[in-house]
Length: 254
Image (cartoon, rainbow, N blue to C red; front, side, top):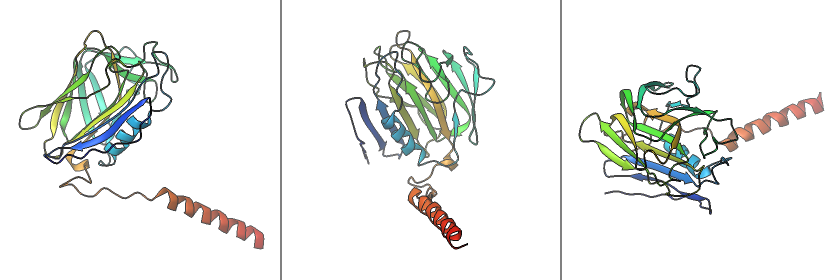
């Protein structure tokens, strides 16, 4: 098996972020920022965000469900249609509901949105069935594990046996933590995902910013095309500086 682990910076409140490609070149991305308590949302979550950035760097044109659409309201339960702009749709079924929390606060017990003010909240099993097989799926998880629960995911593949993953979140830490978990498996696309909770009914979880990608949207991995190279930020800044300098010179000599 070919296994590569990349670790980023740590602090007392951060855990590792890494990507692990397996022999089939399925790659798991994980990063976790530990919480500060039930009533204190994290103002930023750099380790989780870094894992998400790494996940997105191997994808192009993907869509993200933020649970902020006009037809998505607080308290709304499954079945729920999910929309991933540019990447398709899906149907969420099972337990849970959309929750609303004013940005900058928690719901009083550690949960909040990672973008906007709404997110999916639940304690029991729920699933997502995609309109077409997908090769990539990632999400933010909020307030996971403070009451002993771990998230498990079962991928139903278009062909072959299911794959089961344990997210590996911290157990019995402070509330309000944020993690990112993502999977890219272009060699074995999947048609649905089932979310499990080892402490169902006791530990409540929040989920937000779910992202999917098709096989055609995978890049930079074995057998996939190279990812587009963005213009370096330094070059963009240099260009703006030269434009400003030229404007100053024109005013000086006019």
